[in-house]
Length: 311
Image (cartoon, rainbow, N blue to C red; front, side):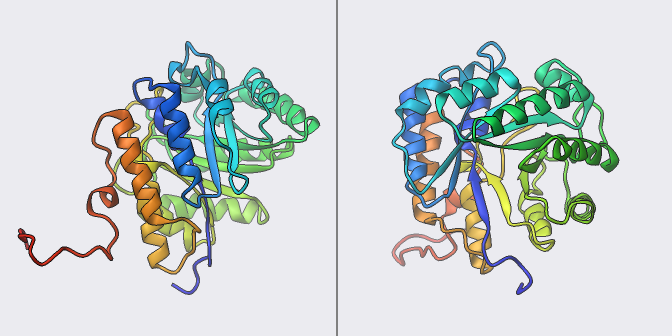
């Protein structure tokens, strides 16, 4: 595995992508979770989303959450925005890193933000100009990059068209969102490989869901292509309210556990992240899908006086 990156950058998206798919939780509980995550060594946290409260009521308290957290100087906090109005709100709140989202699939984009992909790209062009004018950076997230729950296959050429347009308009980076877990390692290799050839210097982030159990396999495929920037969600929280079947993101503690054992540094304290996952599970009041939360790291030992069952 010597050809893998020596380290990767991880963005924790549980407080936004994770909680937007749960029943609304109290503001103070969100603040406590972000504070816990801020102490794990993770370098970036997507804290909130500035969307219309009627669209995603779980994010209606974005301003209160942002003003309530104890900001760690070692952590970069960002906000997701669906449109120019959301960007204005995020910048006014003091964010210097934002993410704008557009779906490669026209149908999903209309379900998500009630406009075509082309219309969203026009809005994002203005959004990028505003962000740069205000001294902020903006990454463009391309959702349904590996497939759409409504349209099925999304041709790579369609994804490249969205990326080319976003970069021409000044995007500071691109993220590919596997919105309903339709990616497999071969599809990751194809799309990421083509993207690398078209844009060798592109700052590329990957956001995988584990809906069909291929999340960590997809991470490995991307690592072997040199990608070193990923999203993950504490406990495996997450989904998309406008994508049927879009259950959890890859769990942060599972990603950290895997890549650290492969010699890829994350800078994250795994025990602290597992503790944060346990807190997230209490917060939402249901069992989260993370297996590392259940079993602990591979170095955990069972006391000899405990009964051993199974094989």
